[in-house]
Picture 1 (cartoon, helix red, strand yellow):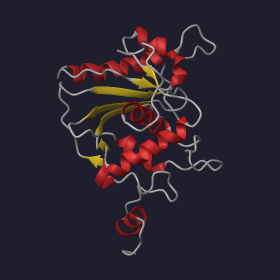
Picture 2 (cartoon, helix red, strand yellow; picture 1 turned 30 degrees about the vertical axis):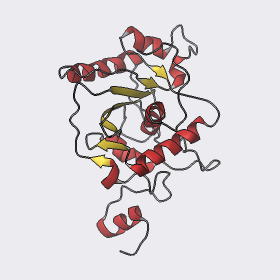
Picture 3 (cartoon, one colour; picture 1 turned 60 degrees about the horizontal axis):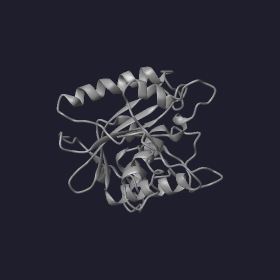
Picture 4 (spheres, one colour; picture 1 turned 180 degrees about the horizontal axis):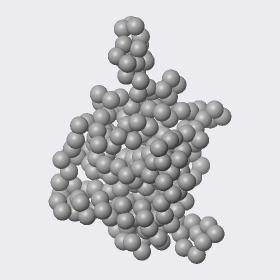
Length: 231
C-alpha cells in the first residue's frame, strides 16, 4: 500500500484518511499539507475581501480572504448556508444573509479590518422576475459586490486557475473553514465535459472560491471592467 503513487489514495488506505474522492476534480492539486493551515493572524493593514455564491433552496457560500506579503491568497473564514446534506440550503433571503455578513464585518472591524473589492456571481445582478436584484438587496444593507467574470470558457479557465493556485501553494485555507475543506475534495468532473465540474454536486463553495481567485490572481480570466459596483 505504501507504494501507491496517488497520495490521496495512499493516505486513505494506509491511515484511514477518507477526505479523498476517487476521480475527484482537484485530486493531486488540493493537498492538506500544502493548502491547509491552522490559522492566520489577519491585521488591519492587509487587503481583505469576500466572495459570494448565492443560494436559497441550495446552500449559499460567503468566503473571507486576504493576501500575505508573499502573495498567497489566504481564506480565513466562511459562512455556509448548509442544510445538513449536499444540495440542501437553509432558505435565507438576501437580507438575512446580509445580516450574517455584517455580523462578521463587525467582528473583524473591531480589529480595524475592512472588506473591499468584494466579488459575487454575476447572476445576482439580474432582475429576474422581481423589482430588484439580489445585488440591490445587498447594496441597501451596505454590502457592495462587483460581478465575477462570466463568458464562454470562464468556468473552465477559472478551474484551471484554482488548480494552479492549489498546486503552487498560492492558495491556502485555515482549519476554521470546515466546509471548504470538506467539499473541495468532493468535486467531480462533469460527465459531458471533464474540464468542468459537475454542477449537480455540492459546488457552491468551489464556485465562490473560483470567483475570488480569478478576481485577484494574475494569468487568470479577469472580471469585466469595473462598472462602479464596488469601491
